Length: 497
Image (cartoon, rainbow, N blue to C red; front, side, top):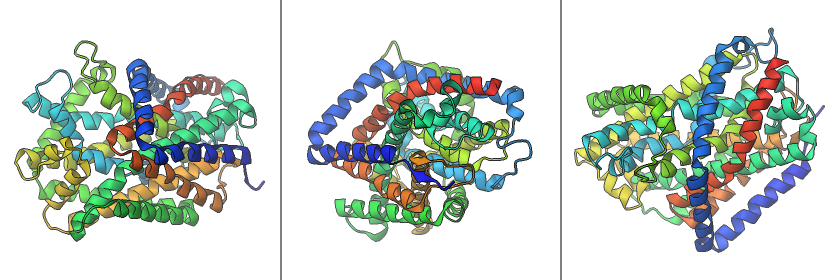
């Protein structure tokens, strides 16, 4: 049966995006105040729930992978893998991290060095150790478990029970039956997913756009203007719309394969042309701290000092991963036929964690060294609210210019493209009826969502600042906590069948 658009879900989702973004553009100050107030309430009163969701997700995945259920193959015992291991890892990595890794790996340490966790003295040796570590933690095993849980919960019933639709509601078939997507509850779940994904991807492009504009301005020696930022958004949207139109194999796969090679080479170039020993020593030390204090990092609530470090950073990140989780679940399900649950879990969590750690150890530690040695005033720029200028300055200080700056811009553009390419695929799949294994949504449908995904980032640029971007993703992720609990119960019911 040919896939058909679910017009009810399509219209409701597109309509709400427009309804939310127009007030942001017309009344940015009022909108910023409302979103900020919601952020404070959710982070302060609901933050603990996000932390427990991370812990539970990690335990559930460990149980599924290490028991006999881990050997079950998606699509049946004879199912063949559609993509090679390298292409599979490249696609899930590029889809999952986007340009966010290029942004945060370069300057996240600066926030922690001046406002360190655990009551450490700002700028101290202890603060420096945690500054090099906390980014790896936020982009590490815990984060990828929030990605992997919905993937397992969607992939298993989709392939084993041959559910004829690829949506977030597919993960709830064990609780509510195979026809949940056609019932009001399933429509509500899929509607929440689409809105959450738009918020999550809006955060990514909202961070990447000023950063890319600053790097382009640095490269050509021109002024960074709002017009340049809008041009960056339009170019990025055009690129991933073209990639979507080309399809899964010719579009996302090719771009992901190229970008993993270029990004890996860039990270190693930064390592070996920069302070190699400094980066490797701090990286090794950070990995040791993470292993030693892994449980503490996941359960620290800052109940005594109440510095808001957990609310401002860990809760923000868990909300971001949670908002992206169902999208990753849908996309990785589509490319994972023929893999066992154990392969899926260990491959996704393991490769994702190591890949992100590489960027923080190489690029992040190099940037911190430049600041400590007085080569680039990164912390000063970050404190002044000019994080994108700090990133552009760091990239411009790497040897062999302008090649590193060009490579950084290229890698970031492709990361943006692959993330939005995959996201538009996931949304169009969710708003499509009768999408069988191996089928894809209509091309026009995918291209439409490629452009629609740019609306919220443009609105967030009107609000301005990191706080507005962080607030939006926390707000849209809240309903997914409830869905996540139902998803876990449904998964175990399905595995017992």
